[in-house]
Length: 116
Length: 112
View 1: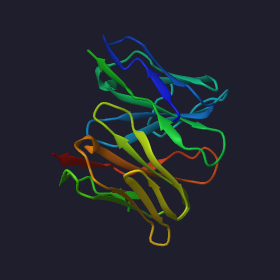
View 2: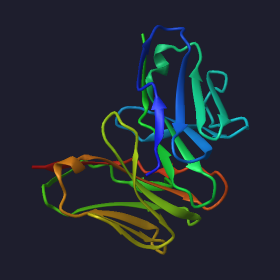
View 3: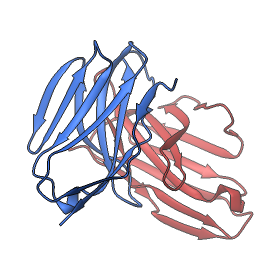
């Protein structure tokens, strides 16, 4: 089946650090990628949608200057949490979908971010 | 009313039982329906993917979609302890890059 690889799986860093998370589709071209945030025992909260070569569309309440998304190729999207603070600590999950209306959406294994 | 309603459980069943999970939704424009399984500290894994109404079977899993009732189900036969996870229903419209709309997820425990 389709595989989405997300890296790193775990990050622990000091407050004020910027953290970059990579998301790769390994065996299909991901025309659209999604970034989610998930709090413990809750469902996924969509942060932004990005199309290859275009600016990301952010959901209401998500700071685009805080969460920088780049989708420069059909197999790679990155999320950079800039100047991270403890309240940014969370589980971040990327997802990718291929071209075409009927394409399923596959998820990476998530990145657990802890800001000290 | 939320777009997608899903009982969060928790649901606890003995090994070998048939598990029935379901979601209701309000948006008749939804055309694609998915079930994901999520283990703790992992991303969601796509289990079943169906378009419009009907049934789909894959091994021990059967997905049903009833668009007239706006109701979808996932059945797990001969449940195993390894099936213990959170099950998320998700759906979306048939247009462009519309994002998935998720249920809250049902926590399932299969007891050996």
